[in-house]
Image (cartoon, rainbow, N blue to C red; front, top):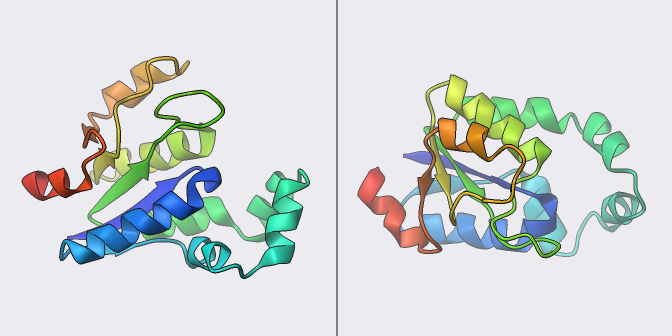
Length: 145
């Protein structure tokens, strides 16, 4: 099974760790190469622009929405890294919600590393996509593939 890892860019380190853990479990885990480059300390100018408020420009320049969509289509499932961000447990942001929707309408399994965020304004939309919550134990994914 090929599983594409997604999440807030804020979680890049945890996303790369999740991809590596999937591979350790014998699963074909993969991720956008920029995240791995960021974690290795590369693409510093890109990250500096990101941190200076140029997120929308960088998303357009790198065509992230379409690239992620293409990668979702090339996968059997997505793994959403949803951990604490800015005091919000199990955070899922707008881009990730879009990506989950793309996975859902293309009949891809959706895994969440943790529970559905209860304080999200779009919790109902997330629930309606029937994601499989791994409750912080990535190895639980083996039960579902």
